[in-house]
Image 1 (spheres, rainbow, N blue to C red):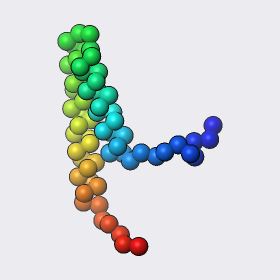
Image 2 (cartoon, rainbow, N blue to C red):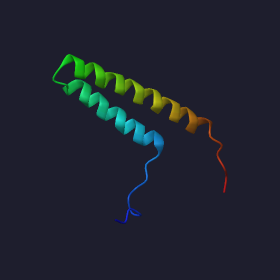
Image 3 (cartoon, rainbow, N blue to C red):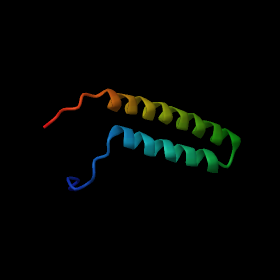
Image 4 (cartoon, helix red, strand yellow):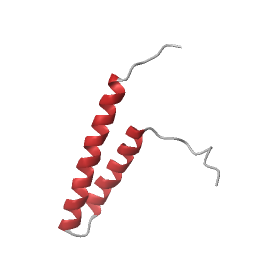
Length: 64
């Protein structure tokens, strides 16, 4: 399978997408326990998103 045309997402974009999915699972969970577990995942992804965004902000920028 050729994946060369598949768009590559940045780690921050992927983490943001996973956070969004975890929030959706939190809101649509059929039980309180499932909602609590999903909310823990949402918080973990949120922390990762923030860390990645901070890394991007402090990354050196090169002029071409």
